[in-house]
Length: 123
Image (cartoon, rainbow, N blue to C red; front, side, top):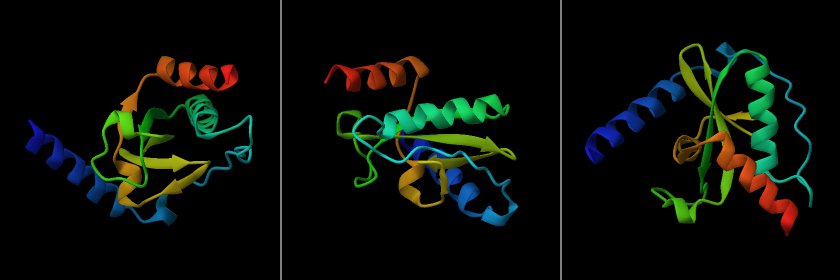
C-alpha cells in the first residue's frame, strides 16, 4: 500500500513539474497579507472559495513545508491543490508553487479547515 502511495505521489510530482508555468492560466487571487488575524488557514479558505467560485476542483492540504514524510501531528501549514488542465497545481498564499514540498501533505475536509480557522479566533 505504501509503495503504491509513493508511486502515485511520484507521478503527481512528475506531472506537475513537467507542466511549464507559462501554460497555466494566470490568476489574481488578491490574498490578503499574513497578519495576526489572517494566517495560512485563512489563506487556504480564501483560495478555496476563490477557485471553487471559478469552477475549479480544489483539494485542501495540511502539511509541513520544512519536513518530508511528516506525520499529520507535525503538519503546521495549510495550502490548496487546484486541478487545472487535469493536473494539480499547489497554491500557497495566492501563488503557484512547483517544489516537491508543496505536493506532500494530507488532504483535509472543508469542515476541518473551518475548525482550524475558528480555533484561531478562540486564542
